[in-house]
Length: 582
Image: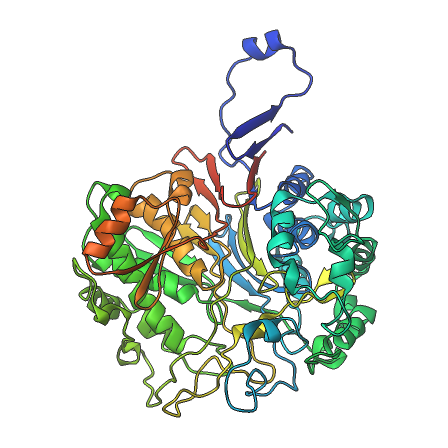
């Protein structure tokens, strides 16, 4: 089967066995009803996904191959010792399912584990580069569960591409090298600072990071892949689990994770949450994912002031989106956590009357009302008398996102992470251990004594900003898949794509290319360098507290189905995204 790899701004077409004359004389083939497409943050990952699809694999099969490669070539963002959320669309039944592979806190976790003796929160870097921050990895178990439901190829063959890369080596990409230059100072280089495996992996004898293009091999990761390919349960019940627990329990700041904690992990299959939006349904992962905020924003926009025809050229349209973000972030921060540990007003937060009421707070100028917490409990089917504490969870960036549509029209939208850059910086089996537990609030009560819903607890899943999304049309058919990395900013990045396509009438790539804007709390952050000065000035004139930020580094991956049934992809130019199609 012929295939195309679309790099950003570059089209490379492989047509085998045809002369130029034959190609010119050949009639234009009619587009199939269902193309297959992959969009990831790395060329190797996209190639791995396409290889699986060419062999007749499903979207889930491709996702397994993709993530096993990303764990190797993009270790600063995600890995098999981390976690993920996958939203899956079954084209035949027009049904959605969510696979929750979020990490869990160990049984020995305590509410004050990230607090100092004086009651202050531990500095983030100390918490991150420690054993305290590693949760039980969930992604391997999640992928295994999804494969049992939706896989078509044999599990043990889905790791071949990654295994070859790990054995033969891969060239360090510009982005990976840049991350090492910027953040390598946080990777321990002496035993006093912590385990030095990552430093020995990435740096030369002079202490300099290997340059772009350096061929990096990872035989330990190849061995790990062999174990997982043979039986994914061995990841949780064998030597790897024991090694992870031993590494976590090393000083400094040793954690309590045990091999028994790892063996007890269970992924969860959940029903998708969906929010009506004009003549579509926008769907995503329920808590502990923060997709609720994505659904809220789009519901608020549906009930708020209509955007002008000028789309992104009208500052008032940006102001509307900013205020919708503020309203949703306020509620998300207050109420969303692990559903096994706290009650949440989920139905209230997506209630049409509640969203319409929140939308009335949007005006043509900034107002404190839009970043104040609402009362979704009043619109929930089950009320609550408890007052949730003011959130104290940190804002950090990391993660990866990819989307796949297979030849049957099934779809995967998946976001995966090791949390912050290079996770804890500790390695086992060629993988970086996650620092996912720093996604908990470092404080367990606010200054008024109210319990914070996202506080640490044993066996609890930390709240996640990961918000993989799938949009369906009025007939329940797949329309668009999107998502992004970016910590708490994920919500805003994901929404920007939908607003660009559905509110402002842009194509998916043009929507991805829009400047990023994150409006969480009082401050509205606009992407420095891409945001026109005129927009910044206009937002300031409307009373917004604007911060032109260099840190708005999204990694959006999007696939959209066009009216003729063909697919259009978009990859974020801010990273190394590549679109591939069959």
